Image 1 (tube, rainbow, N blue to C red):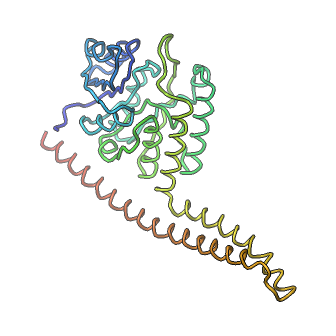
Image 2 (image 1 turned 90 degrees about the vertical axis):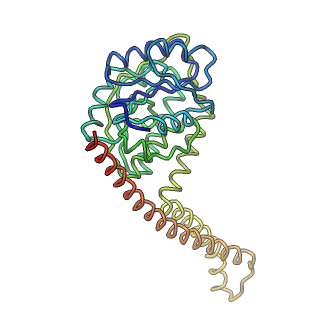
Image 3 (image 1 turned 180 degrees about the vertical axis):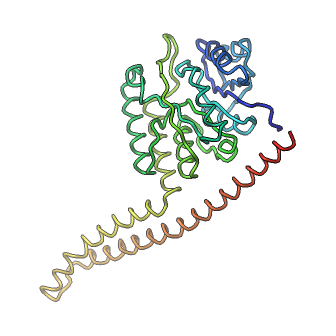
Length: 317
């Protein structure tokens, strides 16, 4: 599909009839040069009709889940800059220009609309959401040694190279976590822009389930840490097993030094097996780290190909 948009605003929607008209109109006003895409995810309240009447290009995604919608959006749409927002009118359209500018001038591959540094904790009325956002932010920043201010925000800007190299694996709301870790691990430039978050208007209901979606996010962090940091992941597992093995072996060995007799053979054998498991874990970490390094090299080559294609396209235009 040929590039046709300078800026594409992507709005995944599921039953947002109360707010989608205002969201589309706000972004049309703030970014008149942008094309507004609303991807309807099986809404039953006429969201698609309202969005179309407001001036958006409406498309359907029948596979339920935000991750599934983002996957289709990223595959189908070509643009220089992508703005992703929600259809619930919680993100201010007036910040979109600043976010786009960072991408279009080459200052960032991903711009994060940071709610947590401004009004989120005051506006949000769901206390467990506040706790979950803080937990995820601190966990990822510590595990991946980065400083992303808002991991779970649904308001972001992306470069073309980010969108076309991002493998969407998540099906639901954990997609934002996946985006963040992809950008960090692929050494892409990430910029934080503080935005003024506002809570959903009266009568508009969140589709995020605090507990089930929270558990999915935590599983995603676990999976991505294992896949992206295999040396550390399996190294820590090996270290724990080595400590357990030593804890089992030392009493047996101390007894042997004193009496010359081993009376706890089962403990000694178990200690040996745990020590072998620790060694296997360390070797797995070494092998997978080598494969991960190879994957990073191949990714850099893919980026070069994409950049060359971009330059060729610009020259042809």
